[in-house]
Length: 409
Image (cartoon, rainbow, N blue to C red; front, side, top):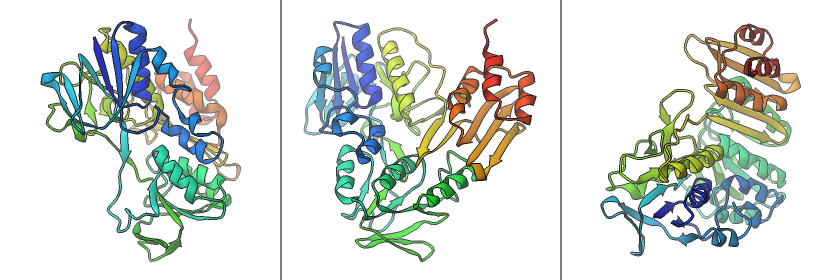
């Protein structure tokens, strides 16, 4: 059996290891398009904070790990997939055959159409190559403009602020992390960052970028030596044109990670899979989902019918010492109930969203002890019974509710 994996991120690496465990005699190859060992993008901020070196970003600590498992690592960019021939073709003409193919190509940054965004003083913060440019250009005291204060942007913000730069953050939305938090939580996060010396500009766009900095849509000007963009990502699916593999937001997969094409599977940030909360299909570009996808996709590629229960939309941020998180349907549903705690002077916020007797979503700021419990209450789908009324009265009683509603009788 020949297993071929396109993509050397968490989904691809975990899938390869799971395939080896299940099929000791198979040929397994990972194709990555960066000249680096497989690494975690989520570790890049720690590299920027000098908490780790480049090796610390690697998903596995030594090359021998893959050699010992007889997993071949190839570098190259896939140009097209030819399902009829069971092969993929790389740029340059090389090709690899497969019996089962896993698409785990992840996602790439999107660039809004801003004049000057391709300038030499502008970079993403997505790859190790990007990180090296930022390490060179974001020294203590340098002026940095960060475009985007979504989830990725806020992670980058943390790393930049700890480098001692003069930091301005520009977010077109009316608050920080607008797709993760409501006005109260997002506003609290902004005030926290500003109190830590970060200038945050919300509700304003970028009109243009030049070598001296950034011009905003409201006429304001930000002087900057380095401009970093963090304006969202999109799945890497361009190489699938003409392959017959169905793509919407990402590669469409069923609950067994199969695409519409025989022997072709998908996992991770590129996959549009089952959403735990809605029952629909969505792309959840977060590392925990990618890791889960990799393990389960491998099981299905080996012939086991491992049905996926769906990924939970979740984000956890530690921004300059203030923890915030969102889970599930944090905006609520029509006809649902909500419980809220808002204590801005104490830097605490909690919003719970209910559908009948079930907790379906939450936002929290400054409540470290509740992160795991929130996720557990939502994912277990346990009816809350009398605990719904108690949480409506005091939403901080989450631990008690979890213990009471998840006990095995």
